[in-house]
Image (cartoon, rainbow over all chains, first blue to last red; front, top):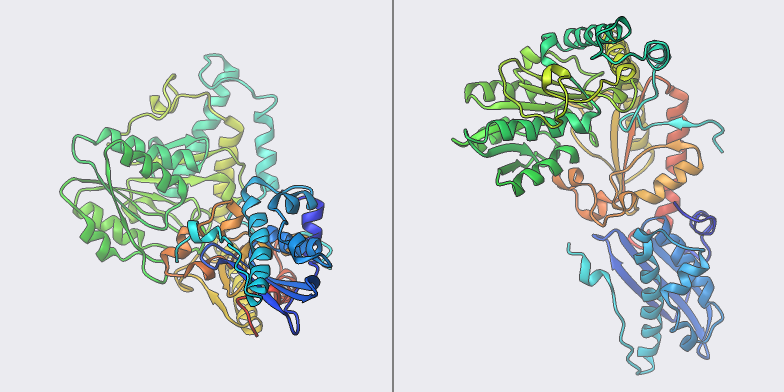
Length: 137
Length: 388
């Protein structure tokens, strides 16, 4: 069902937990849907110096969170903002069709966290949470 | 890491009993005659099917002529509902059921609703058991059928079938029970239960996959699901799956003969699991009534985590279990059964079902509980819902 890469990131997730002294945080998903992703960022001079995540969700949700943190670490926030769910899927060597939404969540969580950082600088970025459209409590 | 496979999913399927398999083999090879053929090779097949029917009839306390072999439990359930509704539609078009039935009942009822039948889904109580009083209140003048499962596949709760049977007799309504999870661990007597139709499936009690049976009480009309031959007294066309029928009968006979020993064994393991898990893993809920429950079934909800991760980590540790979680089925909704007993979505997502069988031992229980303790902690440490 899952690629080796997904299983690796699920069973040995990178950058898991809450960052101390984080500068920004973003959360997407909702518990009713069965997925919540939260991303913490430590940023210096617009560079993501450190990143971590906490995720409630299936194996794919944990794996996409983990790989997303790797993909944006040490990147400029504007570069990280361009992370797509497609890039997340490719980095994991693919996801089952039913789990594509997990890669979208990872993209959205990164954007949400960066939007939180930008907001503190007075810049508003539009974000989207796919679960707002699909799930109700 | 745990070195051997531990199978804790006997509610999903069981392995074929060695004795059963031995009995089945000749009916694949030497005795391959078509039971409808007139010569001796065919007659031999016919004879073993009738012997098997007698064994099943004895196990359920029915008459031989009331037992029909099918290809699986799903077919038995489909046939019972569609066959009765079509045969009795002039009498009425209302059906009563519960909201925790298996999908082979619920999806068939959805299909029948599209054909114009009306269905009342009586909600179960918080303990996972339906109230007979609520079934009674749902009865209308045009009710032709009540269908209620004997025991639930996810949470193992046993329904008051005898009481519903009495009710259906009193109101002259046909009564079907899906006994697929119950057969093999609950003694079934169709007369005592007052059921008119009852479904079973062999692979749930150490028989082969691909064979089931439907009990249809004498005198009840039922439309065919399959047309094209005179098999099963013209009610189910298809060349009989002889080896599987032999396997079903043999497996049921062995199960019935060992029922007390089996239940004692699996109940001991189940009760130990429940005790250890509740003692050692905080914020854990047991889903479903603990008294009226299949002896080998336990269903937990671990708060703050999602079931699929749990199953994947168990699988890495060679422990095979199942969950009522959304992600295992690829849909976003968690189990309809867990929602029916009132669990909120986020808790229903973190459920785990363990179902014990013959091959399990106390050692398995200790291994599983230890693994569970670690896995649940690991997933909770990752969970944004668990800020502790």
